Length: 271
Image (cartoon, rainbow, N blue to C red; front, side, top):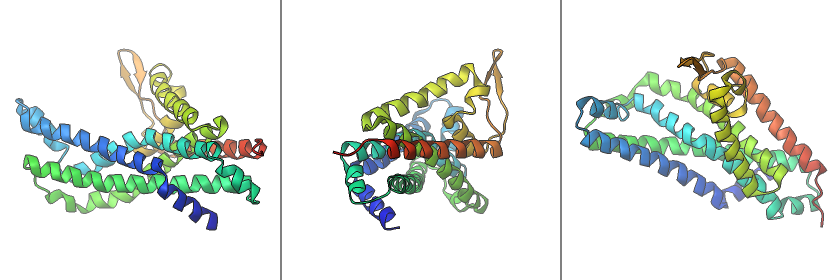
């Protein structure tokens, strides 16, 4: 616990922690701004009504968490990579090993701190997002009566649990890449590249790509129906069912941490 608390204090001061969180909040606020503008200036009544639906609670709760997860999934990869890479470039891992810390324990607790910060960032961004959406609703004249909807509020814990688990895997994936590369920039670059490559590859091989990390974590968040959609004779959007998605995501998470630990144990970090 001592080492975990030390890592949390360290991450609290890291620019990457605050930059990632502020970027997530800013991107969400920008989306809401465009929705508000669209609701106010749309000439088509149907378009204006559709824009207002995004700001109507309790539906807005799910839309906010969906946007936070959609943006935050990629940011979790880059955050995990940034923190893991800094352990090598800044020499903090070498210092910890020199004073007798177990490499595996240090790696796992370092990731644990990243996972906790990622989840706290998710919750914080959701709270800010709800406030921004509520402000947008007031601007366009949408009532806020639905904010107290009991059913919607009771669904939030499960949604947060799924989202936190998915983002923890994304962070672990970036963490492992940066550990192998021993570099923040390489870890972030490769993580982003794989994220978008998987999105594109899903168009051509949906039944294979649905087993890949980001597709599996996406199915966890959505509750994975295990279905697919046909467009022009091409099968798109194939997903795992909910239980399988959890197992596959867990396997990617454990596998990422195993690689990070094994690589750290075998790496030459003396000197």
